Length: 111
Image: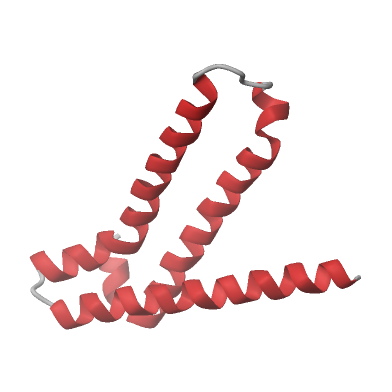
């Protein structure tokens, strides 16, 4: 995997990381939207515990997607500038995705 990353530009890697985060958030969104149908109504401690565990796991997964390769660049390859650029590109692509999603949702509400 790292050999493949070395062949790609930082901008494209940032795009891939942002796309992975958006895809993961989409999957979690589907689970949250349809969770009551799948798991039933949870009126005990299991519901909040499941939501909090999902929240923490989501933080871990998205953190690994966004910061995994930049950490390798920073510590193993001693490329601090490239690592920071990659984090910035990922953040930039995430903002683009947020704006795109907001636009699509806004247009779909008008129709």
